Image (tube, rainbow, N blue to C red):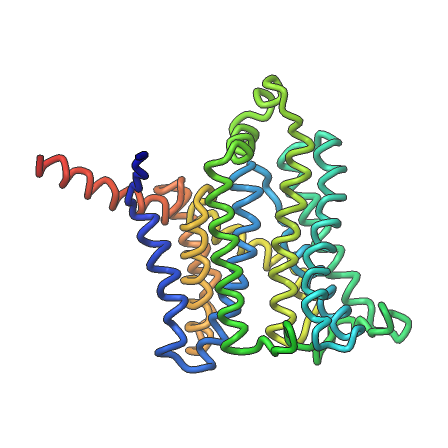
Length: 336
């Protein structure tokens, strides 16, 4: 009988603790705290989308806020146009499809046009900026989609909460729904890391020209992963709209993309577990400082980024995982 060997590591233990904490958290917390953590976990999905394109594939993008905002507005318009209720789940799927299609079309022109990575960052930043400016200018009565006013800088409010099978997915139910989605996507990304497709992504990240010499259609793979990443950000936007009940043009803000990119960079862009943990820690810390009246959250994030780049270029969380693994390995060797 073939033995299945499971290698224990700090990263795996950290991921296990994270999800055990997530599932047990409502047992000893208020509904208000649970509701806030739902939003924290939604933000993790945006970080996942950045890890997928930047960490796995080497595509540097500031466009995640554009896909996030597109997903949020798609859910808002479709759910209101279809009258809420059971139509909210198709609206959520619509937010994923819309963002993925937009990202795929944008990616097609970028990658088949052989545009360099630096200019990819500039183009995606420009797209997010244009989206935000355009949405701010849609306050007139003529700006409607499916009969729903877009609302300009006031955005769209009174968005129906998610409902599946006649059951309203709000507060506690919504929390577990988001955690479940987060777990599924996390496991899928870990599976990709060990798959042939994942190795193809890593090959493009390390040396695109060499991957092409081995026969890989790098433009096709990059366009596909860019579309998947956009759909993931769109899913986060749709969940946010269902959670908050409102969307505004600042959902497209480049500032949001920048913060997400920095969080992933500080954690370690090649590590999905580190990005997940760092995002929740930063989101919680940001809210904590906001309640105390502090305005130094972005300053602190900037300092962490500088420290990470200078002293821990692979990322703080990756450095932590490797350090702890090294300590246990030395203890094990000494014990022998």
